Length: 428
Ligand code: SF4
Image 1: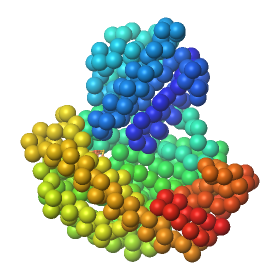
Image 2: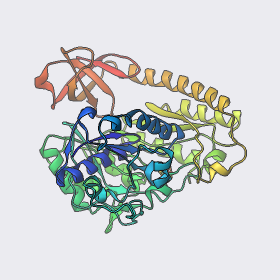
Image 3: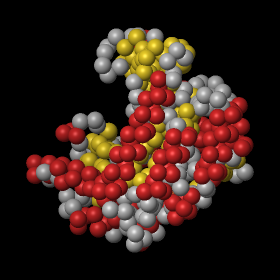
């Protein structure tokens, strides 16, 4: 069958879509990029916020009319929402033909060729599932994701992930090494290691700093990144490995979530502000030009105005290069959803806007500080605005544009930053 996967949510889902594509291709199915050609439409979903789930249901409602002219068309849901809501989804939206959980993707070929009985449990959570021996089907030509661990043990009180992705388990280091080496050999020189809690990686005595050191030796690899890190697992050893491994880029995404100790405790984040600030100092001492990005949340239950302002103060003190700012979204089944003192929606929105405005100003200033510096750009494509310009990323994960033609694409260019907006470095 010809299939298309529409992916929502985080990079883990992007990587899982590549994995699912590989499983389906190995079974003889064919990926297409035009939905009009597809005989199976698969939605890889996210459950982190209610909004993400509603969006997918809206998309399915839009696409199911295709069954009027093509009764054989199959529509499926995989990913976190499939795991969370289960086969009840087929009652909520009767256009859905199958629902498969995050540990059961090996069943997808049999579902597409109708050889799987409808009785089969395609939602069973398998605590050991790491999908061994599957090389993901990659569409990006320059950058690639490699999943190193799955699941999470942390149970932050607002988060649905541990319930839908299960407990942490890591892949063997040799499998990861082989996958990274093969990816770089076909031109993907910028690799991001993925995990819900990537820096808690451990397998057979290997911990995350050991993994970085091992991968750093791959000659064909140019750049190595990782997301998402938990502050409690950012050890001195890891900071020192980041500083000493030349392929590891000068960037870390380190979710803070809130700048108030009481809020952090209620969120079950297992660190306080002093600990987080200490990590930032250590990172900036070991890697002076490191870019630090984060996730921040407003309107967590019982958050007062002064607790919110504490977060703003920490933002001003740390000056993140970029922050993904969210308002708290209740997720049924989590501890935080049972808290009575929910912050009203309009107040959450007001705080979110204040936070976004502050971060936008800081990000603009951070980009302006780059003017005059020399940067290394991994050129990935033409600039969206001009065919005489190319664009790519710096080692510290900023988008950069510079003049150039197709011969620059796929290579490294040294460039000087001559101007900057709040999202792009203009280079020559
Ligand atoms: S660390 Fe916390 S926020 Fe991140 S996936 Fe685990 S439970 Fe969710």
